Amino acid sequence: MLSRPVLIADTDPHTIRILPRILSDHFPQMVISICTSVEDLSYKLKSCSYGAVACSALNGNAFDLIVKPIVSQEAALSVKRALWQGKLLRLLASKERAAYRFLQHMKMFPLAVKMEHEFAHKLATYDKTRNALDISIRLLLNIHEDRSFFDMAADIERRTKEQALDRLFKLRQVGLAH
Image 1 (cartoon, one colour):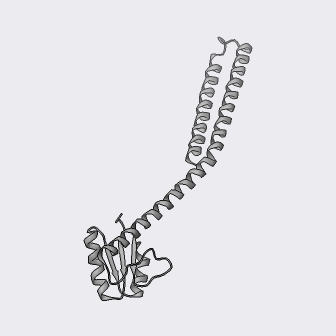
Image 2 (cartoon, helix red, strand yellow; image 1 turned 180 degrees about the horizontal axis):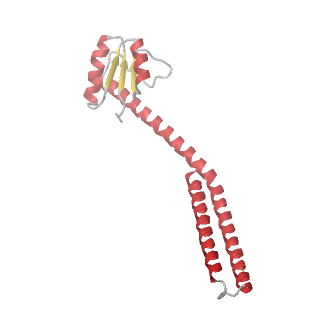
Image 3 (cartoon, helix red, strand yellow; image 1 turned 180 degrees about the vertical axis):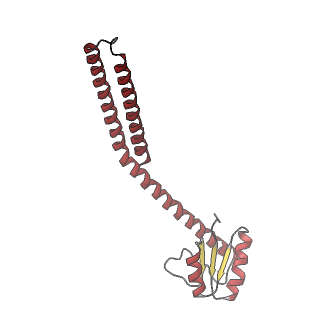
């Protein structure tokens, strides 16, 4: 919960003195940053990401209000709620990104499966054609007279199948990556 620092931005010296101590007492591992001017606040907000920001001015994006005079338990509870709110918002955004990536994958998945089936069909057609050619060649030639021709045909067949399987593997990897 406390992986990000908390920024206290106030011009009141009493608040700057007491609020960090209250938060440190309730959250010993909390990193607290302090600023006392608008310029310092602007710089710190640009240079770091904070889990919660406690400011003396209430604006439209405020999550909660720390009432003055500061009551220790209420101030700590307010900051704790703000930290949980920030964490919840980050988790929801992460969930939305994951859901979007999943939907994109599911849109691509049917195309990849279709491509794999088409390729498997073409490979089966190739095998049928090659077998038919092999039978025709055997009928035309006497196997004993031209043994080297069949050795060469077997090499071509083996290499062609390897190339086809390599292409199938690459298509499948591309389909799975999307």
